[in-house]
Amino acid sequence: MKVISIISAVAMTVFSTPLWANVTPLSSSQCQAMIGKGVMSTKAPVQCDRLRNVTFKHYTFNGKTATGKLVVLDAVAPHVERIFDELYQQGFPIAQAKPIEYYAGNDVKSMDANNTSAFNYRPIAGKSSLSLHAYGVAIDINPLQNPFVEFTSWGTATFKPLKGHEYSNRMLQRLGKEDRKGFAEEVINIFAQNGFIYWGGYWDTPIDFQHFQTSRDMAYLMTAMPTKDASKFFTNYVDWVQSCQNNYGSKQMNKFKDYTSYLQTELKTTTSLNRLYKANPNVVINAINKTLQASRTHCFQ
Image (cartoon, rainbow, N blue to C red; front, side, top):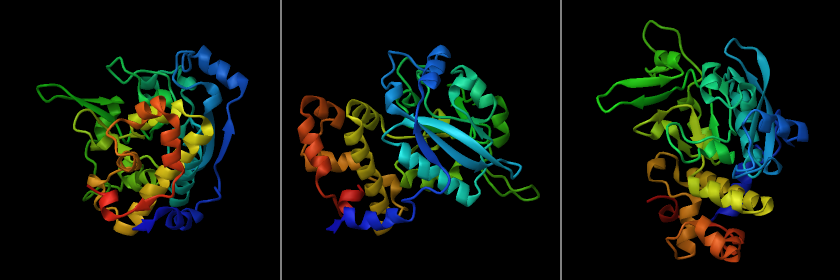
């Protein structure tokens, strides 16, 4: 057995103090603007008091430095802060990043503008159930370079944004052509090490190259919890991912058992943590507050 809390504390030291990004609450005027643009509603699963601005520096595709802003759930905000600090350190380009109210909550217009975004009270494209963007736990990055691709039953592909078809070949280096950049494949590990291990590029259909998220059960759980408990849960989650990778490598991530699975094992239950929390919150909180322990069998299937 290896005690995660000790190892992960060392692993997190490098990024314990953000270099360029910062986290701030939403102002009342910003919240009202979001409501006015249809981005926020009283029916949304998370309200403005649980959302945070993450403001950060980034490089554009022409090499200039710009400032971007994302709106995310409070519990994940410090880790989103680290993600974009690391992207800036690595010189990863982002076309632009504006809160979705600049596009009146219209995801298509935001994608057409190659806009990186996060919170948006909207359903999943083509469905009635809410997107994880409505919980502030999903991020879309460089939609042009990382398009949303749907397939018909007869195999026709549809790209959003439309010009995204120019990036259907996912190779960064191609014989006789200029190198390409800004692809999500370059930053999968950065997102994963900060708690966003679920990438839309892993899906069969649709394939959402731009999209990183937490699990749905995590979204339900964290929005049901008070901020303090949700933050503790997500920090533990990030520690879990980093410790498993640091101790056992990242090549087995296709067989990774995330922190929610670990907690279910510890609690000897197959019930989702969200449902368990609603039935008996103290049981879940006590499990979260225990020292984490990891082994290869804990980390991987």
